[in-house]
Length: 101
View (cartoon, helix red, strand yellow):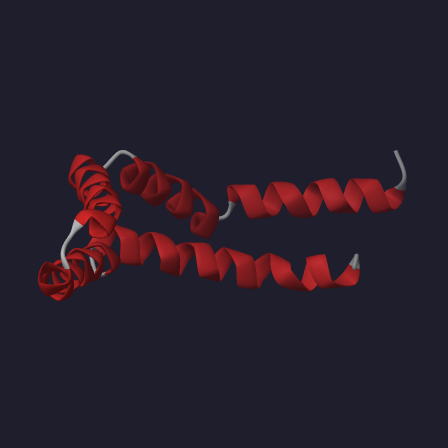
């Protein structure tokens, strides 16, 4: 194993062992397994599919309802925390990705 490979492996281990990465994994698991969010996402998708079946006069209200559901999803605390941690991790590793472009 070359010195570069050893250093790369060491850096990867440091990232995986970091509090940020561990917190990200925990929150990601909570987010992906949150029953309420899953149900909300399903409802949003179902409502969007039904848009094409609506008459013009019903369409505006349904779009407003969907937007309200999407806002609720986007502002749900677990989802917000997940996105925040994901962004922080991406910012941490982006300089490395840039080096290898």
